[in-house]
Amino acid sequence: MSNSPLSVGFLLPATDRILGGEVTITTADGRTMLAGGVVPEWDYFKNLTVHWPVSVDLAALLDDCTLTSRARVHAVIAWHASGTGTRGAGPVIGIEDGQNLAMADIPGEELGGKLHLRLRIVLAETDPAAGRLAPRRPGSILWQDTTIAVLEGSGSRFPVVQTSFANSGIADGRPAMWYLSCGTDLDSSDTGSIRLYLNTDHPATASLLNSPDSERSQVLADVIRYDAARQLVLHALSHEELDLDGGYESGTLGDLLANLLRRCFPLRTLNELRGDRQSDPGEFEARIQAALGVVNR
Image (cartoon, rainbow, N blue to C red):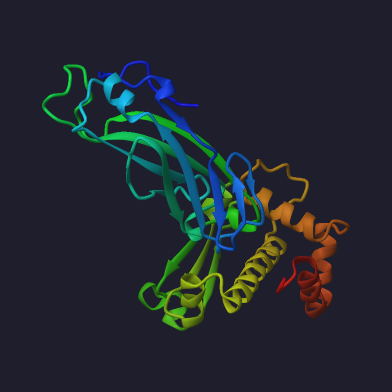
């Protein structure tokens, strides 16, 4: 559904001049689904490609806006990831009469939460012969439509940051591959409390970021996912104020940690889990492996 304001100070095309088609999202492994629902089995190592077809009666659009054939109209997909706050846009395309296809490639490490997508058709170039009430400023929005895709999986819970450990001083600049940072305020935002840092200096991590679909990269991604979840389990057990029945608000760190423990160990209380870890740390690590899985391929 188009979302045009009541008055923008210039003429807009009639709503039937532009028809947006079904928006599809394709993951790096070739899986395609329609936008508007959940992207299955998504995680922060999976890049997404958005395809948004749109049919335009260009001559009628220009006539409605009292523009001439010298005017140029473009389309672009803008996106916003609620989990990380990251925004971006796909390449700008020139609108032609009939069928058009706008696209956007979105890096997985910049995503999380809900992916908000917006297709905009804008004025790129006008001309002196345009009517008195015609849009004239480049970038003026003539039409727009929106949709949302929900990203699921633990990867949608916190952002991933690519950085040089040598330049940032993480791990004293030594060649570690990743580092998970987690806060302690149980009432704070989960996405604001947790960051997974990937070391761009390490060749294995760099290969994962540059070639996420290779078999070696997928195995490493499995290990990183497991280790991040494992660290969160141990962080939850060491947090003295955590209460599995604390009723934390959705989207908080307390809610994330409590749900993670309940999902991994549904029949154990928090005190029992702490006792299990203290009595036999090695076996408890094995139980975490069994609950989370290490390499799933």
